[in-house]
Image (tube, rainbow, N blue to C red; front, side):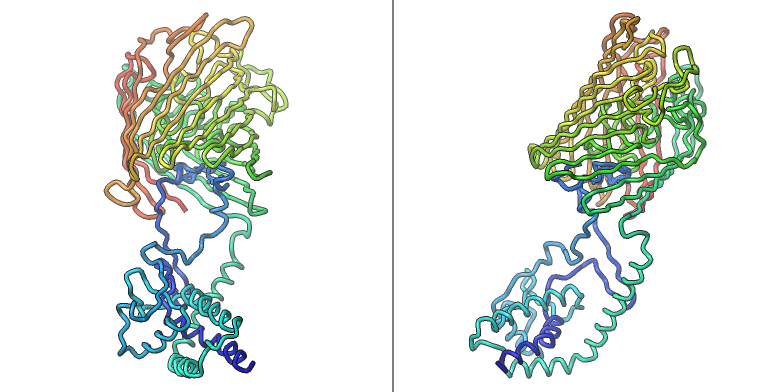
Length: 629
């Protein structure tokens, strides 16, 4: 019995010493100083769908399957929230590259850098060959002179404590010998100063940790943000317009992610921007080019990070000042079963609930045009307005690990009890999208997301929507307003929209991505017989870590939305236009200055802008700087 007590009592001293000798798994990115701990993380993921994503995008676990904005983007949304458990649960701090993984050795001779002349050779020999609680690195080294981290101490302590407990439990004669204890006591005396210093450092770290915890922002909420500052210039446009001046624009977003149970997520987003436009597009780049719709600034010349209705509250046609603070995101996501997650909010977007599939989505990090980022079906009915236009509720159902179904119902003017009687235009009230949860403009949308292999992602979309006025609500082309060409602006319309998006990563750093979409528009009035079909497609190649780790690039080509058919009183093109198929060509390169700063130069060229060959070929150049924190 005394023998067992001796082994137990000496266990802590024994393990404290061997932890200093044992090369248990190290934390290469963790440095412990007297008063602080610095942790550096390397991003090795293919994307992030980054901002808001911005969707807070691209995120609930794979079982719930939902940012940014790629979007690595700070774009806040259910898609980012889908993997929120990884965000809410800190990863093990002692994880390290596979090159530093340890392997158990059975003989001290297996350690190439340990020699019989080393002063600790006998101690190591005993611990390796007698107790089996010392591990070596894959290259057969021990690295006995390197500094020890707290994680190494904990791992060595645990390994040897388990071995001692096994010896005691089996009550064999193979217990700790007096000679071993004497050796350990001698080592303990020799390392008294080092152990005291280590204890002081641990105390300092614990004190600093306690201070940080006491002064943290919130125990349930995390804050992140994105700041975009960009210079934009353009040439071309309508033949009777002169080139616009270069403009400097900004967008700032602050995103709060809150979890009350560890499984749910509340997304709250604030933003401010200085883009102009208003009800008639006044002050917008699109208007200066002569490409904007007469009532709004919808145009194919729009950048990815510009709101759909800049300078305007489209619900009431009231103005929004430059850099006014707005609530652009308010959404709550919560699981109700193993495979079922629900979400609801009063400021949400379709892209919050549906994975974007394409790697070009990332308003602050990836493509620079509105055209390239998402399938047009996701943008129908203001689905990606950039201002959280709709109130929405829906579900995410994981059919299998590789297949899930998402659906939602959205109402644009859910906060208005009734439609205004005042008219802004003939047949168009000052609340042009209607009022009430079920009485105004609304949308039912669904997406089936399929991942047949690790390198292939497929998304199939359908949307059925009703609009109080003659509008698509995508913000992608000037024909978005007056979707049924030649029909009054106040004519309500119904849309049935179909789309598909595919991304194939045929190598670890190169992906081929594309989409196709068809929007069928019909007049929703007994007095009007009119219909129009819009089509659009895009293909592109995305490069990851091009020239340098963290630098991404994209080359994109496609056809913006274009009227391919018209029936009844609808026209194929507005009067005066010379109908021609439009095309879009884009290239960009994102240079990551640091983990929190990136610069993206890029340009896109519009051939036959807005489907009108009377317009000159238009080039839009962008130099975007993005700060994330």
